[in-house]
Length: 268
Image (cartoon, rainbow, N blue to C red; front, side):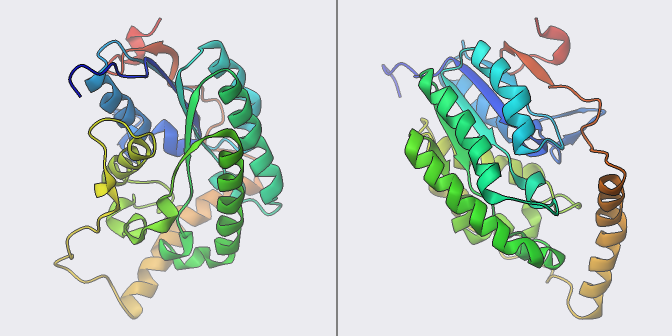
């Protein structure tokens, strides 16, 4: 808006693989992701904006709390996003109260420092992959706690769980665990809307055009589920049994505040 000073100049993103950008690009060409897209949106209204992304794939909420909060506070952001909990949902010993407590501790510390914080709720995973039905109640429980914690600390919430479009397969990558490029675009728009950024609106909630090809049904649908289980679910279970994570040995892709367009080689 002409004549209006954009309120944010330092943006820091905390979280796991979604915030890192998995599903939007790759590890060879580079990951973009919704947080990068959100930073680019902010930079259009403040060319001086700098951005750090501390997210690392595979991280649990407790790890985000333990590993990312202190570096985030040291960067003194005026806006931050905190998204974690999906990796916890998939663990056998999931405890919604424990996960929410870690998220709330991050909310509390950042907002106490004067940071504007945003988070989001999670979609019904059973509508993305039927094999995830056993964890549907976990998603509901965690979303309820995220809302309450966010309310207590004045955290903006992008309510992605309320809109059917977020489970449209076209928004998801083939592993069904990570958003694809279009999904990351919608998440960025949802968070921008929750933060009431300029040039943001509720268009991210609108359904996609009706597909010209109907989704598989009957035995074809069953075969697709089996292929997905073999290609993605099986390897994921194997890593868990071995006590490994997709984030083992990885560090944050943008640990320092730099302009959104700056690549890792340009970071201080």
